[in-house]
Amino acid sequence: MRQRSLIAITAALTAGALTLTACGSRDDKDKENAGGGGTTVVIGVDAPLTGDLSALGLGIRNSVDLAVKQANAKKYVDGITFKMQAADDQGQPSSGQTNATKFVANKELLGAVGPLNSSVGESMQKVFDDAKLVQVSPANTNPAMTQGPDWNGGKKVRPYKAYFRTATTDAIQGPFAAQYLYNKAKKKKVFVIDDKKTYGAGLAATFKDEFTKLGGKVAGTEHVNPDTKDFGAVATKIRNSDADVVYYGGEYPAAGPLSKQMKKAGAKIPLVGGDGIYSADYIKLAGKDGKGDYATSVGQPVEQLPSAKEFIANYEKAGYKEAYEAYGGYSYDSAWAIIEAVKKVVEDNDGELPSDARAKIVDAMQDVSFDGVTGKVSFDEYGDATNKQLTVYQVKDTTDPTKGWKPVESGTYTG
Image 1 (tube, rainbow, N blue to C red):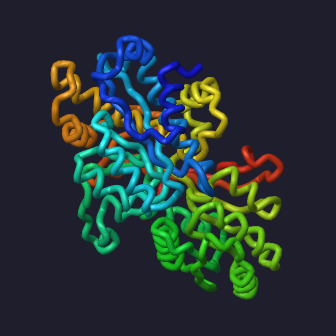
Image 2 (image 1 turned 90 degrees about the vertical axis):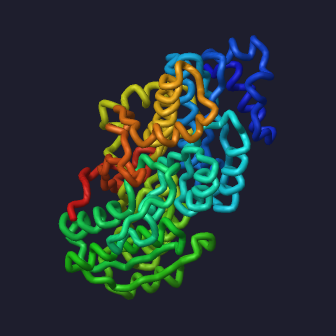
């Protein structure tokens, strides 16, 4: 059951309140109901909570909420009560930047989880970095966000000290998919499509580079507007290309209809994408035509990890209406990384938050290391996850979208 204080926070957020009251203004009963200590630390979470990508976004929000509740229940940081402040970016960079500015303005907010989209993350990084406010994304995969725009040319430079992520990058995910398709699935001719967004275009590019390096042929390329949902012309090109597989760099709201339309046009070949299409909603959108399609996603299947059993049980017990989806475990681990950093800073300052807590937490995050839901959680010199595991999934069943994706192979890219 939700604690009373969390219900009040949720109601306030629903009403549009984005700034929590200062710590000193709460009465003793509020502190008692919070169930932790005398100092409040807010963890922000930014994700698409409404719109086409809300299935993934709500899973992110709920998983952060669960981490906050678990930390308070365990009294994990002595004297600290954690709270969550959620903001909806609808998958739009401008909204993400606005949300980041509002998070910075809340002095109790000492860390933020999110966002889902790399393009949204790019709009938030400088805002957080300027404020020395740590950001941990469970889902951003564009390599440039941590390694700079020249990451693929041998010159890696970390742009923002305050930015970290628990998901591995497209520098690995795209090539991993290419190796599986060429070597294991025996696909030799691909039609490559992307949605022109930061995530989709970057993922498609790394996939294509590796696929051709292996000896595969590119039957055609196309850029699409994911908002149109009408892919008839592209479907015809795919059918006429003699490709034996389609790779789509983008997300499930467009990928599902694309799969359906290309197969109805006569291209009876699998569509393959990255973690952006790994969702039950993809199967809902593609319908029976989605059977046989593939997706890669970060890490190993959460349901198969002994380290995730407690998370799954607690998530179900909490009674969230929405599934934790592809990034649930990574969102929980992102929030817990912030909690670990707060714990370190408090312990190093005789049990109190220092006046420069935000900057200290950024520094502490670099050395955070713990056994999380998704395995070992730690960060390299760029702020990237040291866990490089990935999994290929295939749609095996379209009658129950929540159980349709089945893991085919887990591993990592071998360059």
